[in-house]
Image (cartoon, rainbow, N blue to C red; front, side, top):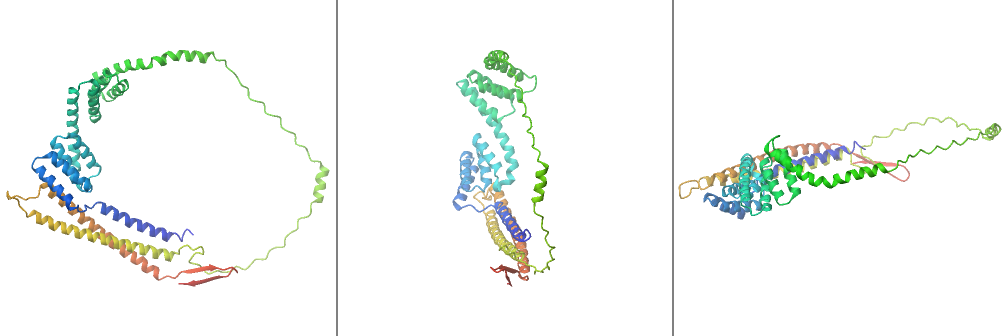
Length: 396
């Protein structure tokens, strides 16, 4: 039974592999965006070239929201916001880009470098807000936000802790002082200040517990000690001996055991080898046929998708070459550098994926057709039981 299920398992594995390859290849392809979205991205590019970075960032981000596969637009939105000094948006969009770069994978290294610069600028802006805050509570909010960005800066954590303590936020102050001790060097001024304040705050918090500890210990000592002895096990019950006379009488009354005559060996009936199971399961021949059909269909699908992608890439490349020959009024190429790089990368990605799908699909189609042809040269037998026990078999 286990042998007969192997062809089905083989077919399922081949079909799953074909689907996985198709999904991976198509996920790496940049699909052409709708014309309205492309127009919005072109508008953002013009705003960037005109040094209107805030507007460019907003438009680039809207274009990316309409087509999240175009990660290069998300990177451009973050870069535009960084140039405009909108640090929160820039940091948020750089982090989103790093999580899902889409067709802008070549910008990952630049995005990491730019994100570090943006984080430093965010910390500086938040510390300026601390100085301008009208109350310790408001200052603590900005200092805590700056400390969460510059995580290992003990001086900022100490500043946040002092502001929290001034605002009577004891739990927040203890948390920040603990962070100071974690990130400050041993024996430094920050570490000593945090330890001193924690002792003060800890003594206030532990006073009620210290007062209750002696009373609880005294009450525990005043309780009498009760010893419990284990219960004695019950004595074993005596087993009554069976009288010998009764045993003998029982033995006499028992009937003798009849011996069965020796069985004659039955002749071994040779049965024909059955290819198909009687429970309706699929034979190895049918399994090969199923595997061949599934593999052939999957290969043809991949060939179709790969051919379509390759044709799209060729069309995009022709349009790209035409745009490179278009000049503006200053006798310069109208296309921006970032746009040229992103379009070229998208075309190469689409063309590579199309070629891969064509190759894999062709190989899968050939393999499936071979399996299909092999399965057609074998015959299978199906056995059908009847009520009188006779089995009828026929080949097909």
